[in-house]
Amino acid sequence: MTFPPIDSYAFLSDTHTAALVAADGAVEWFCVPHFAGDAVFARLLDRKVGGALDLSVAGCDGPIRRYLPDTLVLESRWSTPDGVAVVKDFLAVAPGDAVQPLRADKVLVRRVTVEEGTVRLAVRIRPRPDHGARDTAWERVDGRWRAAGTPLWVDTDLPAEHGDGVLRIEAELSAGQQAAVLVGYDEDATRDVDPDEMLARTCRTWQEWSTRSDYAGFGAGAVRHSALVLRGLSFDETGALIAAPTTSLPEHIGGVRNWDYRYAWHRDAALLLLALFRLGHAEEGRRYLHFLLSVCTGDLLTPLIGIHGHIDEERELSHLEGYAGSRPVRVGNEAVEQVQFDTYGHILDAALAYHELTGGLTEDQWALLRKHVEVMADRWNEPDHGIWEVRGPRQHYVNAKVMTWVCLDRGIRLAELLDDRTADVDRWRAARDAVHAEVLERGFDPEVGSFVMAYGSTELDASLLRIPLVGFLPGDDPRMQSTIDRLRQELEVGPALLRRYRADDGLPGEEGAFLLCSFELVSALVLAGRRDEARKAFDQLLSYAGPLGLYAEQLDADGTALGNYPQAFTHLALIEAALNLDEAGDREALHAWAARGGS
Image (cartoon, rainbow, N blue to C red; front, top):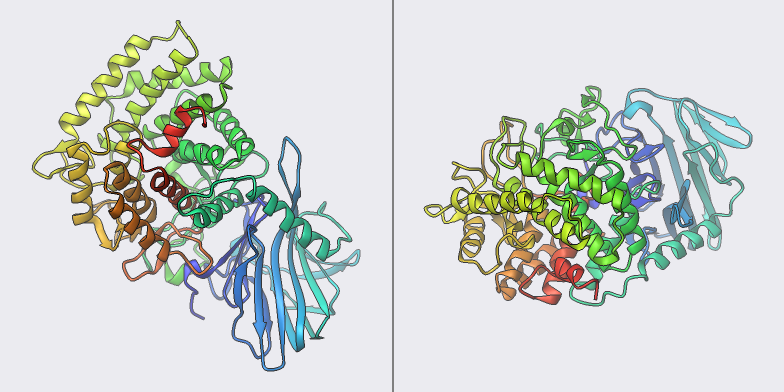
């Protein structure tokens, strides 16, 4: 069996966990009891032992698919010579309360309606617990089918039989008939529910959330869809944003660049908070800020955190072949042990934006943040591991220095806004100015004609496109103009597609274009006054979306999606690029909007 393209999968979410549905109707990725849990369906990473929930209609190779407008409900239309069936797949959600705005029903629903003629439906449910390491058995308990050793249960109004770890359902349905298969992943999940009612409530919940945004500017459709994806990647209990719902989808097909992304990276902080507020989702913005500060209480910050506050030790799952033979498959992420000073800048940037928009930082929150500014005032001249998490010795990465400057700059501005006369602002200001001067002296190489990855290096680094986006330099500064040009000359692998870098990172194989950086190129071009180039690049990047408007982390030059999927940072950068194009000012649009108090 071949592996489907990564970006051909549909993404379903109830904000507690996610499912990926292949173009042939099979659910091939599903983690329980939450995003970072056990993948009981993992065919995404192994065609033989991974486990899946197959659904097919005899006589049809595959359906025509779309999302119902402003929802994460997938509609698949199966047409055969004998009939037409429409399947609606969704993870059921309902309105919540002030503490938890969306409530997961913890049920995956597959609702079938026959519109014409007669169809023959077949469903095969084969969970493989422990990420596909073992099989299970089915038993009938209290009117439900239950998979031993898992939290899974199945309710259906269709006849079923089981054997060899597979629950089999087959039925012939005629025009006007409906059927449903419900797969719950929690003992306390709703019982005796009407699938039609769940469908209507789920659609209504997503649509009411989406319509809070009144943004109708540039790229509104893509922005709206991306915001919905981000909401689906936000954990219901805390508001934490996971980078992606998958692990080990490869950055190089057949290679070892396979990582677990089911965690929250703090580098998303400012961009996520600003996007949520700007698009009318202030409630989610506040929840995210509170989560962020709740996990940033130590003296030293980790670059990522688990949705429950911890990350399992990284380990390899040797029993899985990996996507298209890309091994090893990993769970856990060793990057949590790295020192990444850019983290401090992202968190202080988010805090300043939050206070500009709400005036809501408390004394206790500021006391916590002030400690982190002090850390950077003390340690700004130390090397770190860098934003790209190269597993090698620490270096003086230029991006890290720029974000250290951001930490100090935002700390100074917050101290002034909060009238904190006890803060050592003079020392912070001296450190900030020293960082700025050092980056201009050691971070820009006139012979290369660009800012470079690290002091003493001539390697290029696309993360430096953020220099004008965080206000370190104006976008039309000649050094930034030439940096943009050099990055395009050296790192562009296709129209508007930028790699992160070409430096040796100690791993075999080459990754593809990094879509975050590609969308940040659009924003940097806008601030450079090159709006026509930016518009052309943005339109090109929109054409690279998967068939359901979703993006992975990376894209090969031939259009092959690479890396974990769907990727939060890609969709965040798309929103940022669209808003910058819409405003086309000389400052990054989201930060400028926050500085105006959201007006």
